[in-house]
Image (cartoon, rainbow, N blue to C red; front, side, top):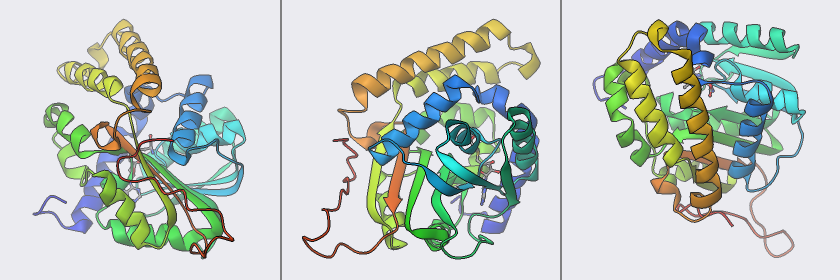
Length: 295
Ligand SMILES: C[S@@+](CC[C@H](N)C(=O)[O-])C[C@H]1O[C@@H](n2cnc3c(N)ncnc32)[C@H](O)[C@@H]1O
């Protein structure tokens, strides 16, 4: 966490930064709620879990933003009832607009990840994308995630910056100085795993994703940052988006299966709430080490 800033200030800046970003957020990040977006989100779930996601009756998304994960998972039928939470009213308003446009029903909740106003064991899936690195007190947040998970519940978070990815992002971040304030963590795989384990979660698995795609993405973004948003030509946005998707496929097929998690731009974590491993009567724990090599 930046040393001079209190947790309260970080939450406040996060709220205001994301409120201001909400209306242009989907266009800026190429967020899609059609076939492409659903395929991306499913692929991320599969990578994080190490297997295809099952169906989850009740999900809670933390830092849901405009709905990238929850709306696409609802559209795919992976979740039954989706609760989408965020600290930013602007993001929740954009999310509700997206849900309405797509004809999907969601519950939205203005909530700080460290203080969840939900009963114990309320959700079968607690998930998030690109949110953990904004949360000042990760230990409190993970304790809350564990508390609201049902006894056999699943946790999945993706899109969290690795240390390496954070260095790569430094240049464009200088162009957006507030990002240096709202982004309070980057992670080594073992640190992310420890946060889940210390909250009592089991079968913790940390993997890495995206390398080439993010070099390309950050270079494109740095160039875009040097222009007024309305002056960036549509053809450039199309080129940048298609290039990113192509390199994402190369990362996925060639690099992610073979290289350690720490060198990737993003980390993803999955874990389960459940009874402790109690001997040979139970299946062996499938914990993946900090190298994040997928089996
Ligand atoms: C980088 S955005 C990601 C949004 C969305 N998950 C996505 O992938 O498009 C991070 C989101 O986390 C939210 N956020 C930041 N700090 C939070 C906190 N302490 N509790 C809950 N949400 C928070 C922000 O308002 C923002 O919507």
